[in-house]
Length: 312
Image 1: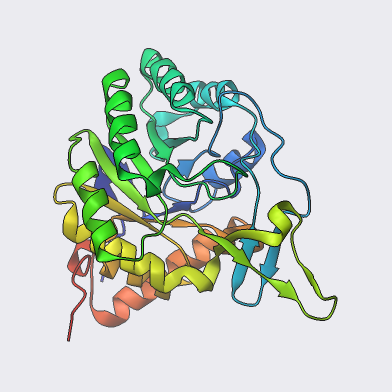
Image 2 (image 1 turned 135 degrees about the horizontal axis):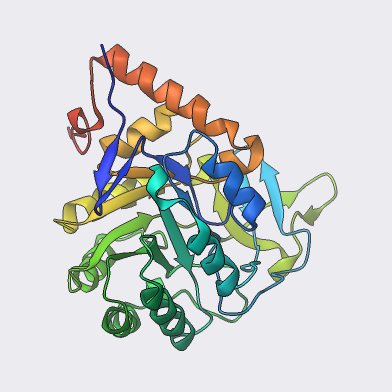
């Protein structure tokens, strides 16, 4: 049986649904090229600010038995660096490029989107509404009214298709509120669910201290910790955003979790903590595991099971 793992969406085709989560293996050209030459189906850049940032002080990442905690603080080389990469990217080679934007202000995002629009490049922006690791800067994604105003301004300056990365939501009312905002914009074609669960605390009991330095140890949780929350967000936004795509992100370390995200309705799947720990070889392994699982279940393509999660 010949399996088809390809994904056609946003006017693009990916050979498979896997790619990196923004923030992992994407800060430098060297890392981006590692992802491009891996088994990943697409590439996304580091969430960039208008100017380069060093990010929060070290140590700012720690692996844990159930995933990871981080407070990176948006370390990146600046918008122009990633725009230059996009200019030279082999867009016709069949591996789409997404450009992640996370301006420190609305005006910064508008300036980056306007510059990207002027270039006319085939890469697609993903605007980060959800970084939980900037001291003193609240997550825009938790303020529906502010999101509405910001997305309207972004839509006014950027004429193409774009998406947003969302924080995790925990209440049906909040799913409803954000879906109402997101459905207002027809060119907002995808949402990525989820960013890390913000402001967790991991303690090293042997040394009686926290494990990362910024914010007195508070940081975003990733990995297995967040899988159930990520799956809930994927499924609930798939239900509420007809005609849009949802990208699943959170807790994927094998083909099994990738399968669950797609079963919940995800069009594509981003990998974060596992990629950070294992390197780009994770893509080939997870893809093989997903294919084996599909074959065992008699599925020939992703559409055979996408969004077909059963309820009791």
